[in-house]
Amino acid sequence: MAEDQEIRKVGLKVTGPRVKILELLEKYDDRHVSAEDVYRMLLEAGEEIGLATVYRVLTQFESAGLVERHNFEGGYSVFELSRGQHHDHIVCIVCGKVVEFTDDTIEERQQAIAEENGFEIGDHSLTLYGRCRDPECPGKQGAITTPSG
Amino acid sequence: MAEDQEIRKVGLKVTGPRVKILELLEKYDDRHVSAEDVYRMLLEAGEEIGLATVYRVLTQFESAGLVERHNFEGGYSVFELSRGQHHDHIVCIVCGKVVEFTDDTIEERQQAIAEENGFEIGDHSLTLYGRCRDPECPGKQGAITTPSG
DNA sequence: CAGAACAATGCAAAAGCTTCTCATTTTCTT
DNA sequence: AAGAAAATGAGAAGCTTTTGCATTGTTCTG
Image: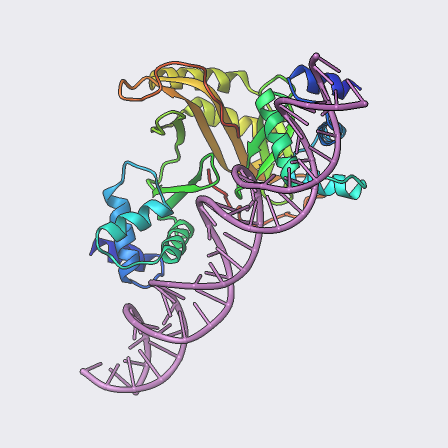
């Protein structure tokens, strides 16, 4: 029911798909899911839902500030619940693991750099690509392949 | 002819399309062009070339380290000649203007953050989105719309 | 609580960028 | 100059995301 309030609060009608998607995002709070992920998980959970609806709802939630969209390499987006606070990402190019971080020094420098260049900053996107040292990560050795940005 | 040497140096055969693309990238050294841009410009210049070839060649040049690929918002890539030195971007969300910058403080912090999180950094992508104060930029006022990342 | 107005949904088709297939052409070696 | 191997071009195909439209569902009014 808490979901109902959140959805109503942002001016959207409370419908099955919207509630289900919001619940799922809350459940996978610690992950980044793609629209396809959301769609597949809901299907597997026995829900009847269309992929187009998932995209539409996620976009609406983004506009409403409920979720954040991140465009990683590869041409597709991942979503996560907004937690109010801005953060950046480190992505393991081997296993796909994503770690979030924030750094005041970087934030300050960004502001200063924008200023120096005559820009007024609206948002920014910082993603580090590398390889994690997680023992379960399959990439144990070899040269790093670097995505770009 | 200088192009011939560069292409040969990275182990690729010297062909018309590759030379033309490299020349064009050198000509537009100060810009970021998409594959479509390269294709269209070459067509307009009277060259016979296929879009598939442009994509293939740009990808090969990227692998060879001759050019860099940047994935901006919107799901498409832009390319520019590699200048050896890493740099980040500030993009004006109104007029599309792109300014490059580098900042040692940010680079250091990134390295430290990766270290703290058990990552070995291969590459990173930092793009600031904002609005420029260029008098010719059409966006003079109003709220900033923020792309994400 | 019924009915109307309008928004939301689902499906399929379409769009936009990029990659792949394959017959043909070009490059490089001998 | 000839042959082997690689590159090209054109179109088909792939992926993620968006759109069109008839149908279904939600909310508001009386």
